[in-house]
Length: 169
Image (cartoon, rainbow, N blue to C red; front, side, top):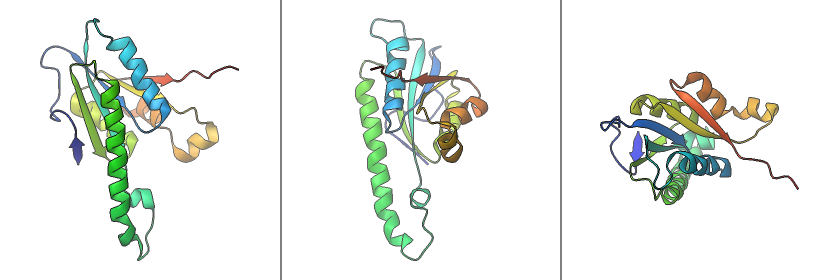
């Protein structure tokens, strides 16, 4: 299920460091949350108390397409390839941003982001989960669901939601 671009899926932390999981997707909000985390917890020269695990969720092709007709089988391989390329782009950008972090793991895991992040917390025995905030309003959040809201209620660790500041004109 997990396609990893880094180290093993075994829990990290043999050297006494705590583990921090950061969820990323293609949004500028998630990249901002990752950059904020790097600045505040992984700055060069700063004692790194955490191991960093960067996780992105890759939806299944069937869930992304939502088709159930006879033509769906023809579309699924193309959608799957596109989703894989997209998730590898996300991890590639995350690796670039995390270049100064000596102890980082990068994972692409298939599934819904809410479940993927909570499962990553369990798998890595993380003390903290960091997610961005898209800033959806109540209606959009109710329709789409909020990953950050779900994680605050279901992850078995501290959850930090990093909001990107709004620029005032």
